[in-house]
Length: 257
Picture 1 (cartoon, rainbow, N blue to C red):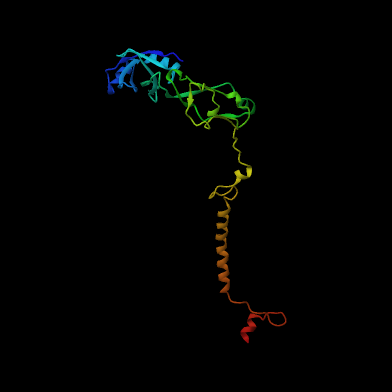
Picture 2: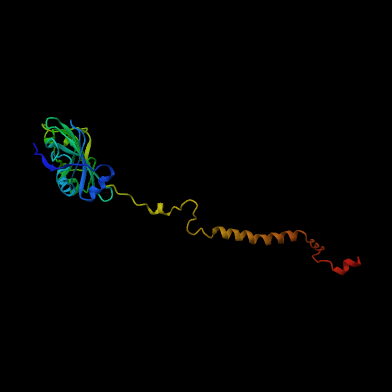
């Protein structure tokens, strides 16, 4: 049974948008809710809580001191942070009873080294980083260890059913067949072959073809004068046929006849 960690809080009177002034003074606004009591606005020292929260997480049983009616047992339900600066903005405390079981998301802590990673070059594929646990608040673990030394070969895996817990005090609510982590092979992308690299993109002329179209055009232009000369030849008078004997008649003789 874990001992409750004491945290000093104070009732908060500054509400709404005015809480920004509290943060600038190093004060963290929060609220205590759940159980039999009403929601109660509270505040605590931001720096002190930040340091403690790094050790506690969301599953450490807390004893909130400084409120009317005595100490309140609670768990950290949620911590809101600025998305850019990561400064804490608000904390929610959930009242719990030591005689009633509660649910919490418990982080997984991966320990040791996988032989498949060290010797076979596998990579770890993490499918889960936390599991939902049911337990009494005082029995809720800070984290659950996952021993990676059992991943001996490629494709070896650890499932929720393989997690080592104290079954007398804890119950994991996740599906037992849900994957936690796996030793996966490394996928290597194949480089394109020279033949594939030489295929031109559609609409782009291959190297050496750039002058083909202009050459064809030049040939067509050169054919036009020859065609014109052929047309002129058709209109020319035919030459006189040679006389028998192989001699052409003289021009003057033709006129006398």
